Image 1 (cartoon, rainbow, N blue to C red):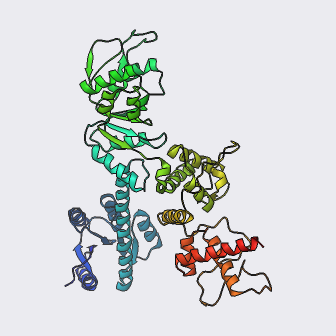
Image 2 (tube, one colour):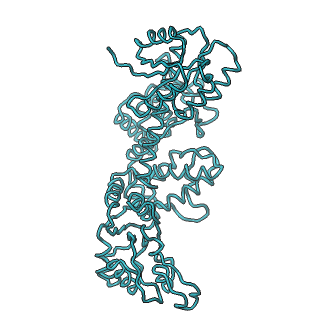
Image 3 (cartoon, helix red, strand yellow):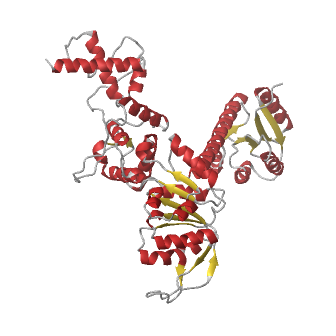
Amino acid sequence: MKTPTKKVLLLEDDRDLQNLIRDYFAPRGYEIISHSSAEAAEKEIIMNSSGDHPIDLVITDFRLPNMNGIELIVLLKKIAPEIPIILVTAHSSVDLAVEAIEKGAFDFVVKPIQFSQLAISMERAVYVSRLLKENNRLKLTLDESTKKMGNIIAKSATMLSIIDLSKRVAGSDATVLIGGESGTGKEVLAQLIHATSPRVGKPFIAINCTAIPEALLESELFGHAKGSFTGADEKKVGLFEEAEGGTLLLDEIGDLSLALQAKLLRVIQDRKIKRVGENQYRDIDVRILAATHKNLSEEVKAKRFREDLFFRLNVIPIKIPSLRERREDILPLAEHFLKIFKARTNSRATGFSKEALHYLLKNNWPGNVRELENAIERAVVLCDSDLIQERHLLVPAAGLAPNVNPDVLTDENIDHLIEEQAQNQVKNPEEKRTESSSSAEPVQTRTQDSTQIPTGNLLSKGELISLATLEKRYIRFVLGEVDGVKEKAAKILEVDRKTLYRKLVSMENDIGTMATH
């Protein structure tokens, strides 16, 4: 016998009706558990909730011994809000039906029960309930994944391996030295290490060693006693003490003076600090992370950085590549920043034009993720249509040429990255194309009559052309409709992608030949 896949709790005091419902629905894959009181139903739901197969659906009569069906709906929605409820009553009252739905019922069935009608309602209820459960499960999985990834948006294999390494070293107290150009996200990676470490409930404090004057940096790090120097009117707790039990990130550590490097080395060795103006040492429990855009090995050779401190910091080195070295991450990052800045403004922008995507992928981004973020924020503010154009990404009135390397990616590689990003997004089927001409006729890529060819924008009235010319025009037409994405065009044209590229090259050669005559 086939094991029932849907478990239904039936609340009905009529034994004959209980048996009829069980006999009708058991062969259809339902396990019917019958009770006649609300108290028994509550216990049944609680008991099943901890098992492998909880209750999928509740069907309840309106008239129950100690409470009515509406009151039971309110009760069950408190203890098991995810379980759909179908209310059965002998009164076909509109007001009662409305009240039942308002209190949380999934559906309303009137006696005498039409089993075929009830079966449809039950199928819908179980289907919707399982969709909601799956949606919640996926949401929890996504939230957990996001939590593990921190605020890092990454798709490239290089960054994913760095994230994996960071999570693996997070469980220890080993010092991590994070290298990389300015704007690559060194502090964000440090936050990920802290967030996935046993110290997650404790402070995470970051200090940029270049942002504080040399005379004040020692006091900021270690604190000072009252009256220890001019202006020290009160005692001050340093950042090492503020980060007690947590993590301290020393950003741009390569810019520390040699004198402070010596003191930091002693702190790392002894795990003790001494405030400026005091003789007393204080124990500290702090995980130290360091970050720099400089090559510390070269700094050591140049005698600008202590070799012993370098070895203390370089226990686990992690080098974040520049954005131009991981171009697979550009479009996911751009989409992420677009969502953030759109939520903060009243911008109409919902996506990027094909030209804008090409610009994003070909730009060298010397300022890395920080520069990309600023560019997207500027574009969202300036955008006056649904799609961000290339002009919105350029620095206005700055007289600066975009830092673009046209040879860094081929058009085919760019199209591949754009297509991948498009497949990862949830498309809105009602979204309108904003770049198509308002006078253009709609294009129908599939028709009932396979010989019917859309001629809008292809032929002028009375114009007669060869089949080869029509083919070339239609290829250009389809490419325009899919924003130049060749993979989509090839699918619509039902040709191999290589065939499409060959035809495009032939078309370009034809144009070149015409231009020379």
